[in-house]
Image (cartoon, rainbow, N blue to C red; front, side, top):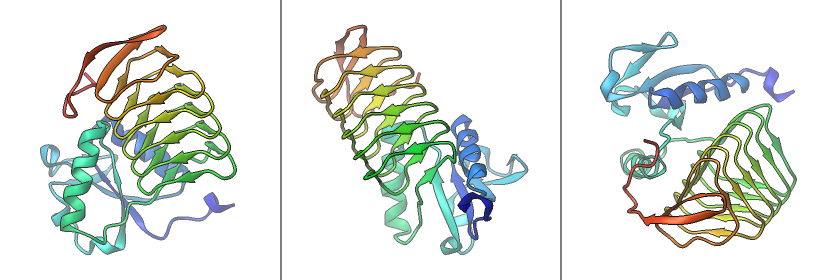
Amino acid sequence: MKNLLKKSRQLVVIGAGGHASNIVNVAASLNYSIFGFIDSDKASQTLFGRPIFSDLKDIVALENYDFCLALGDNYQREKYFLKTLKMFPNIMFPTLIHSTASIGPYTKIGAGTVIMPNTIISTNVSIGSFCLLGNQSCVGHDSILYDFSSLGPATTLSGNVTVGLRSAIALGAKIREKVRVGNDVVLGPNSFLNHDLPNNVLAFGSPAVIKKARKIKDRYLR
């Protein structure tokens, strides 16, 4: 019944790239109205009939709106959030969960996290703040995702899996039960991981192996 009611506050989407389209889809399922977008490279343009602003300072009365970070890169999402929080300490980032997602009991989900369509989350799962769970991702029981981590579309975590800070599990990857993934790790597309990974590595393959070390700022979406 909750999705039959229109949200009283409008949503401002930070970012106006491809990921913003995904956010609009989630917001629509929750009956959010989009007020506008923030993207300095596309200022004065429009997206889905809504204005694109250059900066948050262009939004009058920020306290009247909810906000969402449409930044797919985990490190950049954290960096922008920390910068924004210093300037606007009262800014609101609600959790956005698509209406088709299945959320099990005793599951906790942090502020600013976005959960895409047809995601399945089992029992007693802990998902941190500003995480991103892609379409049809699946999280097994008793798993933990730390802040700013992400799951690509159609990824699968078995039970008792841990994904560290800012780590990215890419499209179609699968992780065996009780595996721990460190911080700032990238697990490549369609990989199968059956062992723990330390911090700051890139791994892929089936079974996945570590290919190289990586730095926190390294891009992984290109």
